[in-house]
Length: 448
Image 1 (cartoon, rainbow, N blue to C red):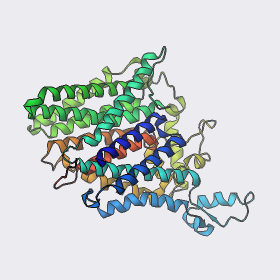
Image 2 (cartoon, rainbow, N blue to C red):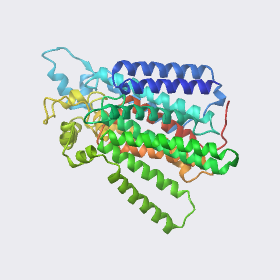
Image 3 (cartoon, one colour):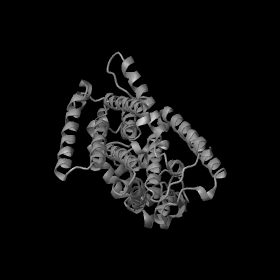
Image 4 (cartoon, rainbow, N blue to C red):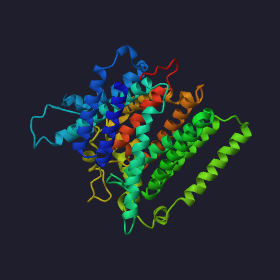
């Protein structure tokens, strides 16, 4: 019972965060973090510790805990000589404040401590969601899709909301859903799309395995694929170029991985994969509305600054990284530190690098970034394990769905900052938690 209540509470929390502008404003984000903490506390109090999910490997746990720990280190007030040794740029910045604030003897490495504190609490919330979903997926071990169903439902609702905006628009129709930014709307939907598509495949497979209720399961699969089609159409009408490409790429990866599970000769398998690539290219041409074609052609851009200045922005971010190479500017400090390097559209406030990889390097530096990478590797190893070493087709399909979502976000992160959108990051932590539990070998336990 506690498992179902926890899953429902987390789903409501994610839904509330999603429909309150993706949790980007501080107030809904803090409300979501409070709800996550409350749900985690109740779950811990009312569950038997002996029935919980096996622990992650020690090194993975250490790295996951090390991410907020490193951010806490960036917030510690250190003596100025140590600051000068660790980050000469930060030391120069503090020295420049001497005439205004004399007598500074200690300061943090972060150039914007309040923003870093908020990001630290936010990342702790993501970690808690990951661990909770991992626990719930273990409890529902014989039903590996159970914890992913809320993702499909919320993706369908968000897509329907976005398409209602398109249908009601009199001119320049564009879907943004509950987000204030079309790219973030697309970024959320593209990670839900592989989950819904592969779940439909799982339902169709069940309809062949169990003849007694095959019609009902086939109908359910068609309904799930209808939701998938709605999500894809909403991504198209967000007119987000990178989001559209990432969605198609994730579908290609999903289809290619599904083919790997089919018994075919090597020649036929590669022929099928090449055919999938051609089909993806055709979909890229056929599915585009005229507005998206114009955006790819560069004739129309509602976000002219970002479209034209993004490569320059990346170059200037590299300049910022070279100034704070080892320990970064502190998560949330990019906006403050970037002003010195901003040479394009100086009247525009730039809060993010529009490339998550450069953003994390600027925030954490070359010392902190390996902690994040190692933690992700530790999570992905068991998540992707069922792709090759699983006797259960259900577990393999869950791994394929999670892999598709990861590919979508990884590609879109090259040209945007979707991982800094709370609703999208909570959803990704949710998917990683479900995939991590799905990849645990050994006997699975199911609780009612």
